[in-house]
Length: 124
Image 1: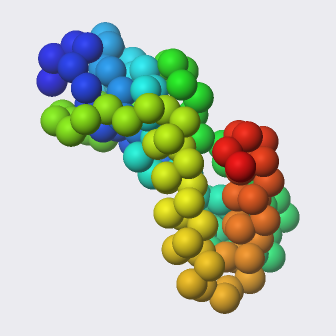
Image 2: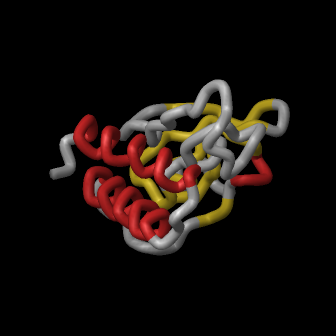
């Protein structure tokens, strides 16, 4: 992995395209340039459960945001870099479509979060 080459990295439950920076203690400083997979909603300790004390709404990382990611989640990316907002909309729409095929209570609560985020992201 070369510094500043495009890579795919996972952060929590989302996956992003961006640039890898310095490496320290098995972590890589990662700069977000596009969204590949939108983060999951809800309680990660109780996956796909709707009746939890705190059902968390998770935003995608922002354009240009830098965060430390585990080095083992970073892979080279050789595709075209999509514009951030377009990639965010595509990732969010894909996740919404997948959840709409599931009638579970967790899916319904997740969709509520995602529709709220879509407004907040100003994607309509």
